[in-house]
Image 1 (cartoon, rainbow, N blue to C red):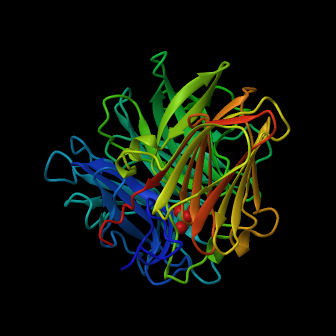
Image 2 (cartoon, rainbow, N blue to C red):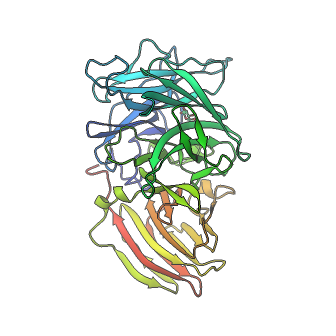
Image 3 (cartoon, helix red, strand yellow):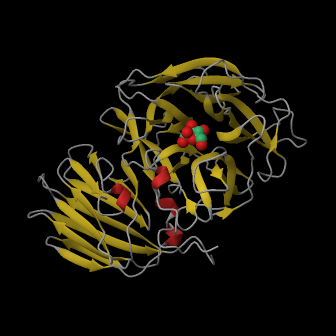
Length: 483
Ligand code: FRU
């Protein structure tokens, strides 16, 4: 085991070996955050899906555990799904008054036949170790549709019912249950917005309470993949009465991440927080090129950092705000390596060797066409260019890995929300992944990068009349202690 290969992220979770995609079964239980994931243990290519498993006590350091779910020869693969703590043993499947219950899609492919997807239940008596398939599976039969998958289960306090959201083609079906075993379809959500056609995958539904007004809102999130080179993790904010999700503004689809590499995000259930905060994590890749990313070190696939999500109202509209900051404190040194109050002309800073970097800065744009350019350089000549203009933030990774040399995967353009002339920008650069949060997490963009060599330098160029302030650069410690 090494975790030291050049492209291996040092503060993001990746499997020691082989293929990983979606996060699954995210549940907190007895002091442990469980992260299961789509896993192919025999190859760096997608294949018969298992559930891999990792555990963390702080959402920062992870320990990879044994495979939790195996595909079944007769019934099929273990596709994506979720996990809950069955408080009060509503299922009657546990000998104690609670236990862990997991829901996943059993996916069967037979040569010459249509694929079939049903929902299955698996339980754990040992706190998330071995998952035992429920003998009465499937718990939810396929009504005869091709895409019928990725169950996310939550508890709805007001109606005292379990709720399941499920991706069904271009819609999301909602079911309820009193015992996690018998499910009734209660409503269905279809899009009324835009031309984003494609198969919806990995839905999530959770509440968030606005800390300024104390009002509770509901977020329906899902991933869409077909339209090439378009953000893939979407959300809508609205109300949910235990039966129907009603978007406040069905015509406006929220974009949870403007990068190309944030997919199938899932929130943890049963979080130990007193307030209504949530934390989610996404698969940091894109089906359009997931099989082409470098795999010579024997692993392929990485998760985003866990993100705390809160809700904010801005000009009468609600947006999700995402923050990784709560999870970084323990990885930072006491003092930043870079600490500059104000830069108004071109500067170049050597970056010392570090596991990963966190760079924060404020850009005062004065409404110029281009207000600042930041360029990261690697010693073999690769570079990554971030350009901030009055209304756009552009990340150009065309010179940062051969698979990103071509259009459309080279450039990611983010329209900057609002008309402010000041942007706060937080950048996490972790070998082969860069996550950027703009304006305190109002906008996020996550992208894979595959530079050659060592990161050596950051050039900062404010346009004439513009200023970059409060630059702080922290070399972060690796989470792979002793590995
Ligand atoms: C999303 C997805 C899911 C499916 C899983 C299979 O990335 O396509 O819909 O359950 O991956 O690995």
